Length: 337
Ligand code: SAM
Ligand code: SF4
Image (cartoon, rainbow, N blue to C red; front, side, top):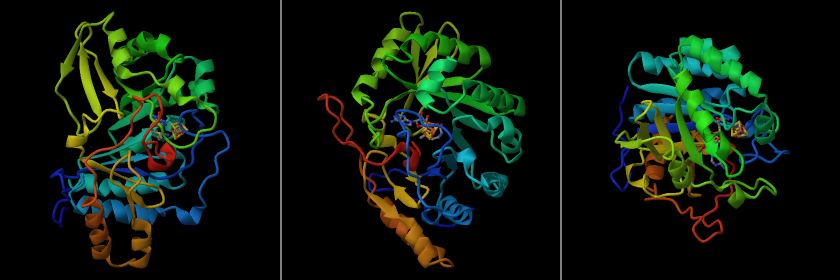
């Protein structure tokens, strides 16, 4: 139930969407996201599931209507299903419109049914290729077959699936149409994501991987007639409709500024830092506040309001000069994408 004044930032944007990274761990090692030998955080640095519940509940009391769980891989965190079942009380009393997850799909075969039973209706599954060999190459540790099985189970359980595909030059360019066809024939929405400069992932060449979505879109229009559709989510996605098939395709271009003015979201890391902008380092340490005031939510609320008052107008990513300006040192798996 909303019992506090809404969270409004200095640019009059209302914060209604919280993305929560529930773990920095993952069973994959995607090359654009992690190095092969990641050092993960000690358990004491992570918010406990009780702390995660407390902070999400506080945000919901301040007007957040949508919560997305991400990571790392959210479904590998121990106890995550109990946490999700607990959070579903906010769906039941209508204080939350949507609880959702972004997942690599590896655990879906086991968990899809329970996710649906807990009130989750839509999920995003990240998938960059339909080739088992290339899947192994890009995820290092993943198995395509397992993810495909998971996606099938998710569908069977009644979850609506959206596929997120990172556009990678020289990697999945040639699969553009087969990915579109596969998604269309299975009834999945599809969104392409431009690769972002995050973390120090070793010797992978990011600029070599960067495939602009403008190019991708031009390529798509060699076969399809694309119509821009107005649907906006307050986030960086833009959508087109394919006239020939009615398929909806999204483009997430985090490197462009064109979405910042409608940004409605903040991100909480698994260590309780609140990032007001994906592309900026500024954050607020909510974990320390929560641990200092275990029984006084008003102190945590003050900390959140103070943080929101510092939400910047936009980010500073810039590839245009062929070097990565505004690079953010933290890993995507920490902030949760
Ligand atoms: N493990 C889950 C997954 O893969 O869906 C959730 C966390 S993952 C960090 C969230 C999303 O971020 C995935 O769709 C992934 O492809 C994307 N991602 C990771 N690193 C990225 C990068 N450097 N640039 C763009 N997207 C990235
Ligand atoms: Fe894991 Fe997701 Fe990062 Fe891949 S993108 S390494 S699945 S957190």
